[in-house]
Length: 45
Image (cartoon, rainbow, N blue to C red; front, side, top):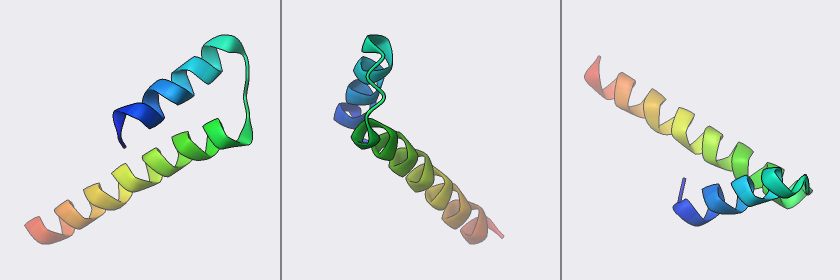
């Protein structure tokens, strides 16, 4: 997750503007982190 997505999502939450774009940015970042973690764990095993 890059910082711009995080900042944009945080600003959207602060202003109460829960636009689909902000939600997708958050979900995309979470999904990316989960995928990376899964790949790292698989490599360790």
